[in-house]
Length: 126
Length: 180
Figure 1 (tube, rainbow over the protein chains, first blue to last red):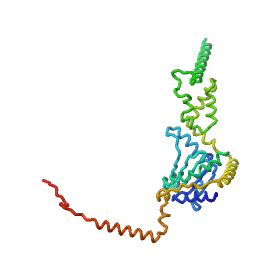
Figure 2: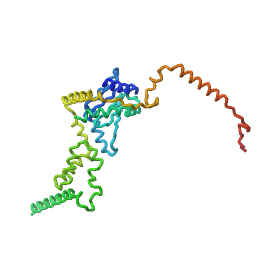
Figure 3: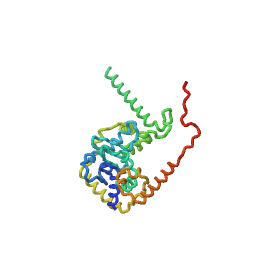
Figure 4: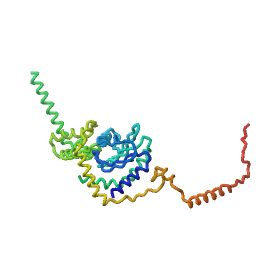
């Protein structure tokens, strides 16, 4: 069954051209599920354990600036873009090329949501 | 004499401080012009709900009914901490490597157990642009001859329809303007 899930997420990955990685972690950055393009360049910089906890804190602190509670942070770099979604207790992270269509990445959210409820169970039991 | 006066001043300021904190402690209980219309409005503010630290809010909510000065002070401190933008707190979330690997193992075990019960979401989105943003994969697929024949038929019919349109004009098509 886990192969089916991986296959499903791999399918999502290939639907968006230029998307390299989909990763689901807990709020401390511990990975639960990760699918990536096998032949793509090294994008591990974006998945360093410190990046995801920083996102949760930044999202939390940024809400105090007066912009309100945000759900998604999109970071554009010179070679990559990182889209992080707040699905507490989970964090959904997408890494794509800098010219990847961000709207397409955001559209994947609805297709992932169905699985997140089940994956949340693994985190909330602890 | 100056020494005694300074002591008296100090005592006076302490008393006023004590009174001030006492006011804060009893503020939500006795109705006055400073009483909030909504009970426990501070606790319901979005800033407090935003707090990711359950302990802080628990302590805070427990401290409300008590008229203790210490609780009133700690409430002020906590409220400030919640509303303050604390960039330095980002470093405090890093996990030990051992705990990190332990959690990965734990999660993978639990997921393995759960995957057996997971059912695929049956939400199938229709439409080329919504469901398949990467249209190139669709375009490269072969087209069946039946589909081509149907498309040709539609094209011929629409072409015949368009060519059958005739304009039966009864007035002059070009109308000259009456420019003096």
